Length: 129
Image (cartoon, rainbow, N blue to C red):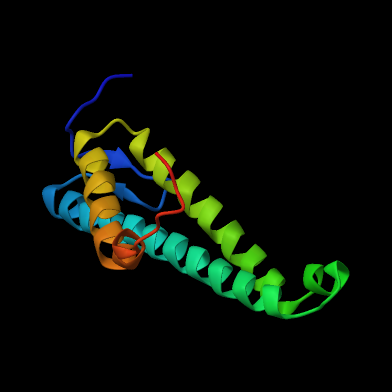
């Protein structure tokens, strides 16, 4: 396998087959959006976890009640979606088409810039590098 820049590709499924420049451009835009959505989901899950952890500290619920809570089921559902999207993005990158690889990088940067800016602005002095 080598990196290449062709415009004839099948991406993830047989139904996502491109063989022209307009298909390549729209696929690159779609990959950027998919990767940004992945970053948004990741940031949302982190903030949801932080909020629920704070609430759990203030409540005296048993561990079994937390295991079967609606929030935990929702977090589990979101985790599955995030893992599946992550594998899709990995498979897209593994086409070795450098346009798609660049799209994954751009989508990651755009998604982090849009959705994780609060995390980078927090003054967290409890952490060491």
